[in-house]
Amino acid sequence: MFSLFRENVRIAFDSIKGQVLRTSLTVFIIAIGIAALVGILTAVGGLESTISGDFASMGANTFSLQRYQFRTVQRGQREKINPKISYRNAKEFNERFQFPTAQTSIAFTGTRTAEIKYESEKTDPEVRVLGINENYLDNSGIEVENGRNFTFFDVKNNNHVCIIGSDLANGILKNVNPINKTISIRGVKFKVIGVLKSKGSTFGNNQDLRVMIPLQVARSIYTLANINYNISVKVADKAYLEGAQDEAIITFRNIRGLSPVEKNNFGMERSDDLLNRIANITQYLYFAAWIISIITIFGSSIALMNIMLVSVTERTREIGIRKSLGAKRNTIAFQFFMETLIIGQIGGVVGIALGILFGSIVGAAANFVFTMPWEAIIWATVITIIVAIIAGSYPALKASKQDPIESLRYE
Image 1: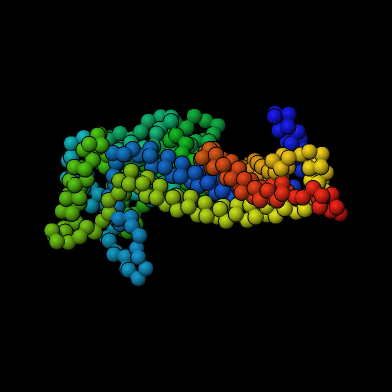
Image 2: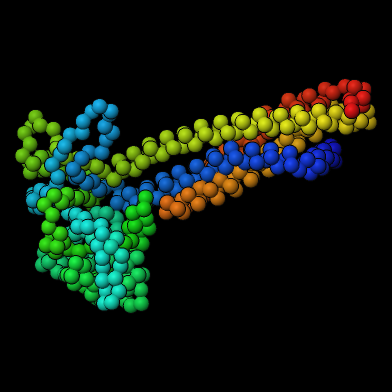
C-alpha cells in the first residue's frame, strides 16, 4: 500500500515537472490569494501590536481629561465646540482634585518644530518640546533609561533642566555622556538630567525626537494664548478608578461653572477604553482582509480546476494505457488528486512567504512592530488544502471514469 502511494506521488511530481510553465502559473495564481491574506493580516497585526503597546504602557488605572470625547460624528451632525482646557483650568483641577492615592499630571506641547543646539551641533527644526510636571512620565508609562525624572522642586522652582529623547542622545550628543550637558532651546539653556527609553515611531510621529522641560519654564517660552493643556490622572489601584473618574468629572464641572442640567463641555478617556476601540477598528481591517483573500482564492481554485481538467484531457491516452495495464479507478483518481494537492501546497508556501515579506515591508515603512502571523499561516495552510480538495476532486473523478478503450484511441 505504501509503495503504491509513493509511486503515485512520484508520478505526480514527474507530471508537474513536465509542465513547468503551466504549474508555475497555477502556483502564482494561488500564491496571490494566500499572499493577500497573510500580507494584510501581518501588517494589521503589526499595527495593532504597535498602538496597543503604546497605550498599554499607560496601564489600566489611568484616565485623561481632554477637550473632546472621542466619538464618531454622524453625517449631517455638527460637532459641539468645547472650550480648550486652559492653564487656569488645569492648575485649578490639580489643586482641587484630592482623591486618595491619585496623582495628576499636566502637560502641553510648546512646539513640534524646535531646533535644539549643543555647542556647534544642532538638529533639524523637527523636535517636539513639551512642558510637563513631575507626574507626567509615570502617568504616561514613559521610562527614563539614563538619569532621573523631574522632581516637585524642579517644577516648582522653575529649574532649567530637561529630559531628552533617545534620538537626541544618539544625535547631537552621541559622542558624550548627555547627563549634565547643556543644550539650547530658543536661546534658553537647559541642563540634561535624563534620557528617555526609546519608544520608536507611530504613524510617522517620532516618539524619540522630543525634549521635556518643566511646565512653568515652558509657559515662559511658549506664550500662545490658545494652548490646550492635557490632564491625566493615575490611581494606585484599578479598584479606585471609577470613584476617581466620578470625582474628576464633578471637580472639572465645577471648574467650568456648569449647572446640573448642562452637559459636559469636555471629554474623558480611559487608557483601556482606547485599547478596546483600537481592537474594534482592527476587526474591520481583518474582515476586509478576509473578503479580499476569499475572492482571490476563489478565483485561484477555479483556475486550478480548469488547468487540471486540461491536464486530464491531454493525458487521456496515458490514462488508457495505465488502465489497460491494470490500474484501478481509485489509483488514477488518487494520482490526479495528489498532483492538485502538491500544486496547491506549493502555491500556499510561496504565498505565505510573499505575504510575510509584503507585510513586514509595509510594517517597516510605517514603523510597526513586526509580529509573526501564526494564525494567518495556519489558516493559509488549511485554505490551500481545502482549495486543492475542491479543485482536484472533479478532475480526479473525471480521469478515473475514462473508458480505457476510448482513451487508447485518443490522439
